[in-house]
Figure (tube, rainbow, N blue to C red):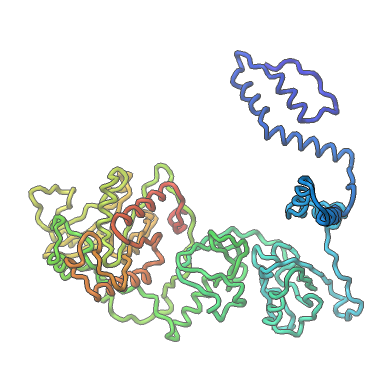
Length: 586
């Protein structure tokens, strides 16, 4: 209960009132928990400090204090100089040390600024000899303070009038932070120098080389109606971009270099040719320029038409080494002879219109260019189906071993899509466990109906992984783990599966002679040609399919590769991941 509290006087501070209130709190049987909680809150030391600060501010506000002097920094400097000129006691040494600390100097400097009310910059007076045209226009003189950072604005020459116009303001730059320079403003002078007859590149050099205070004389643009603020758009880059190699960029220093798979936050699309963006994760708050989708696509079409850019046709099918996908028939006893047989006989047989290796004539009207993909962060909610885990690998990566170990280590969370086959069932095998056993005509009918994500032939028997077998695992609230040929990714990258794609590539050294995976180099017959083929395989997969990859795992050895993969998959459950917006927004 709260006893009758003595009435506080008007002069009683908030801190004292709080202390008085706390002392009157006496828990009773009915409200023991509530009053104890209230007393603990009121007794918090941090709350007491805030109350003291409040009382001090009210006290100074009431008495309207004035500074004792306006040059505390100068007094401190004079005192420090006096102390340095004579022998010092311990207290004097400590005082001298304090006076020389940068923090105290900054505090005293701030004190003097406030005491002198020196808040606004002193602007130079307008020149008396203005021409008549100049007097008729409203003139704005802007003084900005910049260090080594760019001004954050680009300029252009107006074709009709020849005036130097501010073309764009980079979000987060010095010009943007000032709020004083706007797109369309006409720039007349920089630091008192007339720039109307200089080239834009010369003006840009003057602006970039100016340090400290920079004064601009501007004719303000006619104000447009306030535009609605743009919501930020996030894009996954599907190509590498280096502004210093791009002759089309309006200002190379203002360009944003990025690599494929970088996530870009687009903060402005006002310019249809050059968007303003920042790389997610960068500390730099200033936006920079990237080519817009329309502009990049337009010039790629032109390059393709002129023959300097390859047609964006589907990547050519890779010869897939099924030795990396151990067949259950071998029961784990893979020797060099069996692997050679797998290499020779088991090839992907996906039905296509025409041969994948045949040259294709570029069709610029229907070409699909890999430029950007709009993305957003996604973390599965309770009740959502788990994401499909897709492993792709270069030659020598042995992704099947990683897949099997992931499932064996945690069968409650991860499952294997049971494949289909036309071979006879063995005595110890159960239909639907090791394989789904079906007749050849049924298998071929399922191929025609598009039920398999991939299929192949080995020893005159057909094998394949169906979409339905993946759905069965996901329906059990398990993450289905599959290892597939890279070109299957186009089929699996859908909102239904929301696949998380891991590219496993073997680290290949030029002089490598050590065992790879669990098999010795002798049993695999590894040669210099094989090592080169492994390297080229990884490069080719990365070139053709790397834009779809969420994580690249460079495999040194099986134990470390599994440990790394385990950590990556664990993060899927607790950390949001970037996915195409179409997977989440319906």
